[in-house]
Every structure is written in structure tokens, then in C-alpha cells.
Image (cartoon, rainbow, N blue to C red):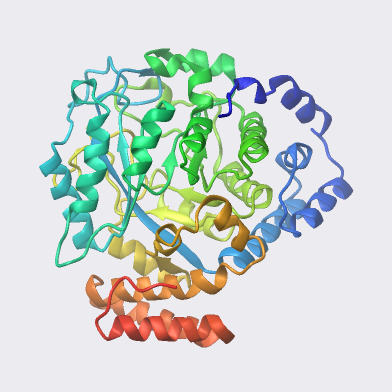
Length: 463
């Protein structure tokens, strides 16, 4: 067993690296972009150089490189999911969050297991196949079993023989034994955000509860790995501190996981602070991240960790989300609600934060398809054991595309046939046929066979 320590976040090294590369030359930037095209990732110095890019010509080269890498690895696929908030009970005091313990401005609620089943059924009726289960960092009767039961309830929910096929989980840091129990429920990805790696800021914005313990949180992914969960999601809350510092710290975190366990995170999320009920900070972030800087962050992450999924939530508005697709985003939420019970009765005031994109799942799917992106509901890799190191072993040589492209199309065909509005169905069929026509060799053969099977009435087909 590995003993995790927080010393792998070296603030002094980060500061020195940022200072040293605060004004990189055009030649230095170009060298990093050439290196990035090898799709083997970037180091701390490389990322520091890219964070300092402001020249429009260099920025355009950065964005073009990110687009090239995104298309090479992921093609035009966009994985679709929805968050499922089961409880907004919380024992922490996070100054940016509506769920903080002393906030009296929201209605507290934790869903019963029948209510969780009902919420899940509503998502299934929309066409969702994967959810991110989210809970505040406290549970009814302070019992972690509530989370385990909730995962089970999501998997057990059915509507017309359809079901959720992958449950990812975002809950408080756990012990190794608790992580083992979570793994036994066959979860997909365990996701946790450090919020900020800058310890003085972390201490300032977390003023109560177990979340005050920086070391316990930053080593949570080590414990998850030790418990056998090898699909992990990380992220920072952009706006709490200088994003350049947090990007480099996150690279240190990724490097430590790769060093100790041989594999880094499966996904990275890029949430920005959004207004939240009862939070002054959320309306006035200490370090505002502009839309321009936000796009640059996404592009840099695509270059730095090329085979890691980048998640874009409905915190952002439709325009901002759309602009990031070509820069590296590979997973998006759609039709989201951030309050417990929100799919039956929406109450944004009691949600964790304000939403920027209020479109329904069908609207998002149609808009994405009209742009030429293939909405994917596939969960094949997870269920075939292609996770962690096994996933990277086929992702890095590029062979994963022979599975992902066809699987995305078959899962989209299933959505089109069973859930899409007439307008979305028309757009979807046109995209599926044109995408298959543009494919060659084995992927094209697989895609045609899988889509034909779906059109004959089969479901959940993948390779």
C-alpha cells in the first residue's frame, strides 16, 4: 500500500517556474506546440510557457494545435451525461457554495431511495445513459451507506427496459475501505475537485468542516487508486486563485498519480465560479477568469494531457460551451439540474450554483449534431474493463478510435430512434449516415453493423 503525502504539490517550484517563463519568446512557444503534436503530454515548464501566451498569432497556433489533437484522439465525439444531485446536506463551510452548512437561504433536502429511482427514471425517459451522482458532504444520519444505496437505486431504475448504464460519483473524500465499498457498487469514475491547490487560499475559503483538511482532500485519489478505482476525475474551481498556479499544481498532482500508480486521471473538469445562493464570493470571484482565458485553459489542458477527457458542465452558457468543443472538450452535461429532486421540481435557488445553459437534452443534442459533432451515450469501455491503464494502453496508440467511433454512432442511433424529437431525429440520421460515409476500413464496417443492429430493434450494442 502506498502512503500518500501532500508534499507532491510544490508551491515554491510552481512559483519559480511561472516567474521564469512569464515572457516566453515566440521560438519557445513554437517548440512547445511542436512537442504537443507528438501527443505525449507536456511538463510543468511547457504548461507555464503556454499560460503566458498573449500574442494573437501564437494563440491561434495554440488553438489550432488543440483542435488537431482533439480531432486526432477523439474525432467528432462528445460524450453526454447528466448530474443527479441526491442531497444538499453539507457539514462544510465553503464560502463559494450554496450548500455550505450555515446557509439558511436554501431548502435542505436529501432524496429517499424511491425518490432517487423516480429522478433516475425521468433522466432515462429523456434518453440519458450515464449520470454523475452528486451529494453535499454530509448524508442522512451521517451514514455513508446512503451513497452506496443511492448508486444501487440508480442502476435499478428502469423505463421501458431502458436504464442508466454508468454511474459516476462525486462525493466527499473517503477512506480506502469506503472506496472499496464504492467500487463494489460498480461505479464508473470517482470524481473530486481540489477546488484550489494554493494552500493559503484553500484555508481562506474553507472555514468549517472536514473539507478544511487540505491533505485529506488532495490525497483522496491515492486512496481511491489503492482501493482499485482506476477511473478518476479531477479539477479546480477556476476563480478562487490564479489559474496559472492551479494548472501547474494540477500537473504536479497528475504527475504524482502517474509516478505512483502508472496512470493519471480519466477526466479533468474546468468549472468556473458561478453565482450561488447565499454566497457573495460566487458573484465576485477573487480571480476572474475571462472567456478568453477560459478557452486558453481548455486548449492548454488538451495539449498537456492529451488522452484525458475534458468535461464542460452547464455552468457555462451555450455559446461558451460550443466554443470549447474544438479546443479539447470531450464530455458535456445536458439538461442539468443542481438541486435534489430537480428533474421533477426545479428549484435553482436551492441548487449548488446557477446554470448558464438551460437547454433541454434534445435541444443540446440537435445543436451539437448540427455542428457536426456526434453525441455519444456509449459506456462500452467501462463495461468491457477498458479503464485505467488498460484504457491508456489502447488510447495512446490510437486504436481506441476503432471502438469509440462506431460505439458513439450506435448509441446515438439508439437515442435518435427512441427519444429524439422529429427535428432532432432528422438531423441525427443525416449526421450518422454522413459520418459512416466518411469512415474507412474496420471502423466503417463496425459502425454500419452496429447501427443496423440498432435499427433492427436491438439496444446497448458496442464493440
